[in-house]
Length: 237
Image (cartoon, rainbow, N blue to C red; front, top):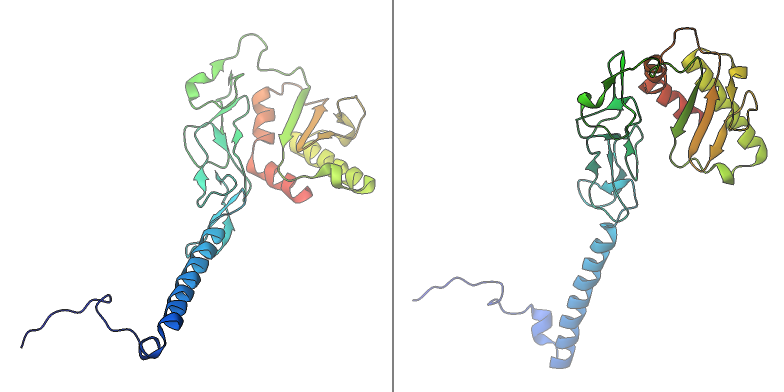
């Protein structure tokens, strides 16, 4: 007797297929191939995730990218923010450049590092502490005033009702005033109106007046770049 291994290609067809007429047998085989094609197409559709998300571990759906990472439309995985950028939000479609006065050399960070006291950098997206240079004269001092700009994501300010827009501006005024230690009336929009902010797209901007005497840009940055202030803004939004 001679024995040989039988692969799946060598095995006889199932009784149902073997007994069926040739035309019906071909139809069954074509139907099975069509089903496999449909299932493959379904898997491809599930692998496409919206911006700010990536596939789950079982590839059955999508999940938001964690803070410190991002993804573009159609990406299967989230990517860490590059050095010089950060993301404090989950589900970010892009990372934000480290603002002036900060830097980071680490990927996947949720907050940039402040320049040491007495030093400053006027460039964004800095990746080296050496870009923080010693202040010359009063270059690190804001003369008791400063401009604060916050980049939000998914704010959809223009889609809100007028009363909702006003409530959102008031909330941001309170957050900024509390962070830097001034009265709400010391927070002004671009037009100089007190107790309000300017919101354009996803950007929130304001001038802050009457800062404490002797305050430096470093002091202000420590108050507004911190995670506590960021979380307060997210709660208001």
